[in-house]
Image 1 (tube, rainbow, N blue to C red):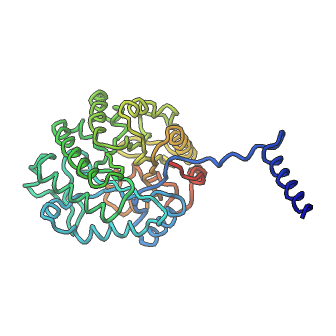
Image 2 (image 1 turned 90 degrees about the horizontal axis):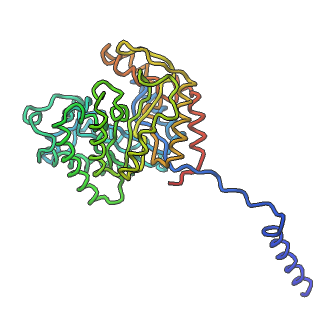
Image 3 (image 1 turned 90 degrees about the vertical axis):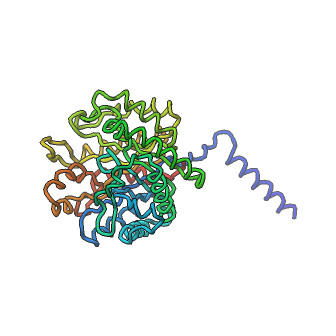
Length: 378
C-alpha cells in the first residue's frame, strides 16, 4: 500500500516536472487557421454532363464554400402573381444545390439587375434565361411596388430552396450608379426594402450586395472620372449590406501583368468608413494570354499563382469572410460551341480556372490548397 502511494506521488511529480518545470519545452503552438471560406461558382466547363459532374467533384474536394451565382433573369410576372418558378429554373437550382457537400457552407448570389447592370433584369421563362421584359415590366422603375414585392418573393423562394449561409441580393450594383444615375436612386430604395424585410425574417443570415472594384476605382471607361460618385454610391448602399463584397478582376490596361500588392489599397479605408467586413464575391486571373475586343490580356500560370497567393494573404491579414475564384475549370471547350460574339465576351474569363479544360490542376491550385488545409475559424 505504501509503495503504491509513493509510486503514485512520484508519477504526479514527474508529470508536473515535465509539464511546467524549468527548462521544459513549450507546448506546440496551435495550428494556423484561416478566417475565410474558399469556393467557386457553378459556371460549367463545357456542355458535357460528365465534365460538369467532375467539376463539382473537384470543388467538393478543394473548397469549403459552395456557390450559386445568378447569371439569368427573373420570372417577374410569375413571382408577382404568386406562381411557382419555371420548372426549368427550379431544376437547375436543385441540381446545383444537390452537388454541394453537406459540410460546405453555401453562398447564393441573386440580382434584380440585367447583365449590363443598367436596369431591370431580363425575364426568365421555361424556354430561356433572357427573354425580353413584357412592356408593362420594362416601363416600371426599379423601386416600383410591384418590383419590390416580386423581387422579395423571388428571394424568399431562393432562400427556401438553397438555405444559404451568405446571400447577395444585388451583383456589381455600383455599376448602375455610373450607367444610370436615376436608376441608382431607385435601386437604393429597392435594395433597402428587400434587405430590411429579409433581415427581419432571417436575422442571422448575412445579406449584402456586391461591388465591382474596377468600376469603383475608375479603371473602366464608363466609370473614368467618376471615382467620387462611385465612392458615394458604395457608402450609400452599404447602409443595407452586411458585407463589403467585391467583384475583382485585376487584368487589363490599367494594371501591369503582375498584380501589385497595393492593388486593394483603396479598399481598406472604405471598409473602415462603412464598418463592413470584406469578402471577395468573385475574382480570377488568366493562366494564359488572350485577345478580346482588340486588346491582348497578359496571363500565365506564374502570374495567376502570384495573384492567388497575394489575394489569400490579403484575405488572411484583413480577415475576409470568403473568397470565390469565379471559374473552377477553364471553359474554352464551352466557348468554342457558342456564337462568335459570345465567344469574345466569355473569352475574358475562360482561363481563370484553377484547373484547365482537361481537369489538370494549375500551379495556383497548390497555393489554394495550402490555404484550405488550415482549419477554418471565422
